[in-house]
Length: 195
View (cartoon, rainbow, N blue to C red):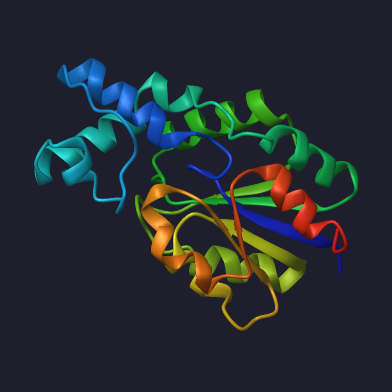
């Protein structure tokens, strides 16, 4: 079986939170700094529950969503993995509308090139379980990289390496995974004997 790695997109390979913050500051005249420490968008962006979900959907359908910058080292390391024959899969819970898919795919292609075998889309903050299990049926998945512990729990006790990409909102979960990564170069070093 061909080796593979599964990666979350937002805040693992593309900088979602920082661009979301810029969007909110511009659109709503806010001056929000930093990132959410608990990934509580209502608390972080101070917009109220209804406004937050509406605003996240507006952001996801805006040109800004299709222009996210790569996380440090992601382009170099993922392209290296692809050149070594590793299949790279993205699984994202950014939403599954046609517009959002087009914006995301254009962003990924423009930043990374054609290195992904497939990008699976699930509804906004949806469950990635089925997408991850489908990939595992046909590939020797070495690692799953995500910034949310509930997603990494999908592969708990499966032999797949759980890599938690460090973000302020996941600090309390870092000792529960195989590796907590601060950048893609650290992931490359951790996986060097497996890829």
